[in-house]
Each structure stands twice: as C-alpha cells, then as structure tokens.
Length: 328
Image 1 (cartoon, rainbow, N blue to C red):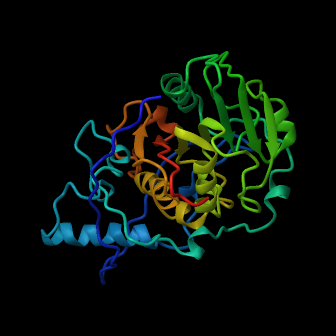
Image 2 (image 1 turned 90 degrees about the vertical axis):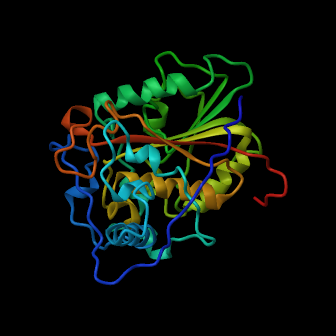
C-alpha cells in the first residue's frame, strides 16, 4: 500500500482567556428510531470543554482582537463556501507537548457496566441510510480490493453490520464487539471476539496482524483511547490503515464527557489527538464524507447535511508508520 505523505502542522495555545464562554455546538435531527443512538446535543452538556475548548475559546479571543489569522483553528469560524471545517481541523496543527486531556474528560453520565448496557442485541443501524451509503462508498474507495491475498481486517466495536461494500470479502475479517449475538449475524466476518475495551484495552492479536482497522461511530465510547490506539498501532502492519468514522449521533449517556460537550470539527481534532499521542502513526487526515460537505456549518441549527437527519458524518484515517523504537 502507498504511504501517505506527512502534512505540515501548526497549533494554538491551550490558555483559556477570561471573560469568554465556550460556544456550544448544536445540531438538529428528527426523533431517533427506538433503540438507535441520538445526537449528544439533544441533552444539555454537563460541562464545557476543557483542553480543546480552551484552545477554541482562545482562538476566538485572538481573532476578535485581530492577533490571530482567520485560517487558524477552522472550528472557530464559519468556513468559506464549499469547505468543510471537519476536513480542515487537522491541517496546520501543531500538537501540545503533553496529552491535553484529563481523566475527567473520559467520564460518562452513565458509569454502570457496559457489558450490561450492551447485553441485549440491538439490530438497528446507528446512522441513517444516507450516512450508511456515504460510508459504504468511502470504504469502496479506501479498503483493499475484494479477495486480496493475505489481507486481514479488524472491525473494532463491531456489530451485526459493518457497512463494507456489498459482497466484500477477505481471507480474514475479524469483528470485535460487545454482543455475541450481533457479531454472529454479521455476514462479512470470518471470526469474532467479544471484548470490553474499557475494561481490557489489550487486543488479543499478534504484532503486525492487520492491514486495516475500522471503527464506525464508536470511538466516542472509549474511556482509555490512548491505550487502545497504542494497541491498534501494535497490531497493524507497517503502512497499515486505521479508519475511525463518526457522526453527530451517539448513546450520549455512554459517550465520554469530552465528546458530548463539543462539536463535529472538535471531534475530528480529538480523534486526531488520539492518533498523535499514541505515537507510531503518520499525521491523521480528517475527511468529511457527508453529502454536500462544507455547504452548511454543522454546528449551526439549520444544517442540512444528509437530508436533515445527520448534520455531519466524518472519517479520520491514518496509516501506521514504522514500528522501530516504539514501545507497545
């Protein structure tokens, strides 16, 4: 597989200025189907954002004073027409020296057992049909060709459907999820593993096993993301591809606090940070795969992405770099 060229990066201070409040992202969506996740914005956030929110507010203050160029930190301003803030958020980023999030950022409204929460099978789709179509089309463009010899794929946080292209097959496609009944019904899987990554982030696979790791609308539930992402790097082959896809919908009581209190472009920054601080990955790339990306700002109430249902649907893709001199 070809290796993605490194991207130049440039960043903002995480200092929180006084006298400013973090704007709260909002999105509109119709009433969710029974058993399906709902946008986190439908519930009042329990707290404002911390590390990234500080940078966001800091940028707004600097823009207001004229001390910062408008191109910095695109989530802070309305994008020019046809340009998605989600796609720009990881461009020209210079990461802080230290991991910018605190333990409380990964707390959740519902800290009860995840095993109990997911014990009942949910044979529903967690994104709407247009979003599914966009994701499937995207997969058809980035996944290895059908039946490529030696290719192995891990669908992390999998369920009864993976949204791969129709008829897609590889010699090894492993599903890892929380509900065995759901995994058994997934036709694309050749095998599966039931595991709670919030209890045990250690992945039960040998080093350099997989060519691709996918994760659909579940990265926002990880309470130990750096541990999981380091494990992803370990089990990916050099130049292997990791694709984390996410929308503005979730089971908000189980999503981490930092996710439910931020907006769509911020989410891309958060996932990009996971890749960066896990080390061993090339610079992450955010891709807005919503129909008509960038034509409306997803944090505004009147967003019209995906037939007024999903305000945004994005993917963060990264290739694994060399494993030399990297501890597991």
